[in-house]
Image (cartoon, rainbow, N blue to C red):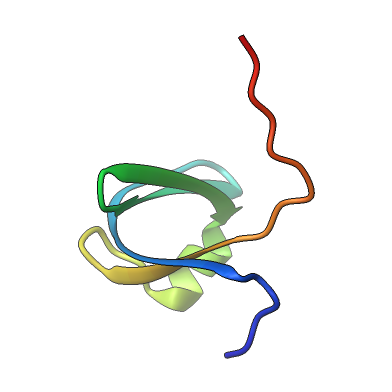
Length: 67
C-alpha cells in the first residue's frame, strides 16, 4: 500500500475501545502512544487485536499546542 503520509511509525496495538459505530485504537510507538478513531468495520476488516504490529501514519494540516 502506498500513502502520501510521510510520518510513518512502527508500533503495536495496546488497546481497542469499541463504541456503537466508531472505535478508538491505541498504538504504542516507543514511549509515545497514538490514538486513532476509526470505524468498527475497519477494526473488523483488518482483524485488529491487542498486540498486533501496526504502522501508524500521521498526516495533519495543523499541529497545535496550547497552554
